[in-house]
Length: 224
Image 1 (cartoon, rainbow, N blue to C red):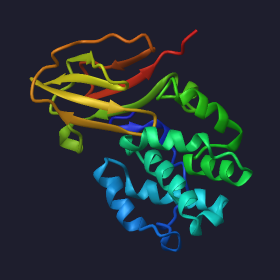
Image 2 (tube, rainbow, N blue to C red):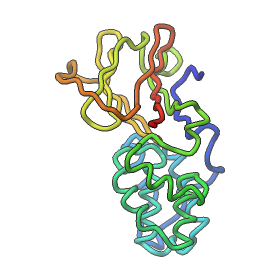
Image 3 (cartoon, helix red, strand yellow):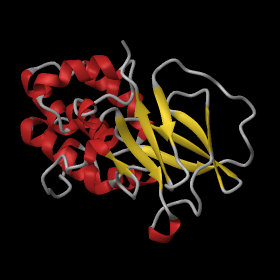
Image 4 (cartoon, one colour):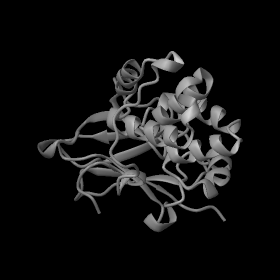
């Protein structure tokens, strides 16, 4: 397994190199959008490539504000901006013309043949993507050793489930960290205190930790 944090849906790289598209003809400032993606814990390079992939399949979106906004939202979510998840999924539901379907799938880095399954499964399983079974249920790893660019000085010791979907509290070296995550993104933040309530969820999602690794892996057990 990897020794550094990783989002397995991004390995290998899901998009070819591309510059940030210009959507000024649609009245949108993609440079500003890219800054917002970074602030929302997304990856601007991935945002640019996902957006370019979608526009290549639906060039008319470059001059249509509503269509451009659809792709910007989906690309931002695809780049790891967790706060755009609900908006992007809502927009994906109405992208049903042939051009829009191709563009949506391309923006997600998926084949159009799995777009409907992705939309359906993501409503109940925020960690699903077509390659998860090939990864034996592993989705992403967070943390990592601080000495090589990670977040933690010691291996994680304990994991508690929080109330929000995709959220966990992780105890590391006496400090509690909050993990928010889904298939495309993960965000770690330091908690001011230990979680006051521990929750249980029967969704097959767990955090795998061990004494010999600074990583915490999100794993999903397939439901029968």
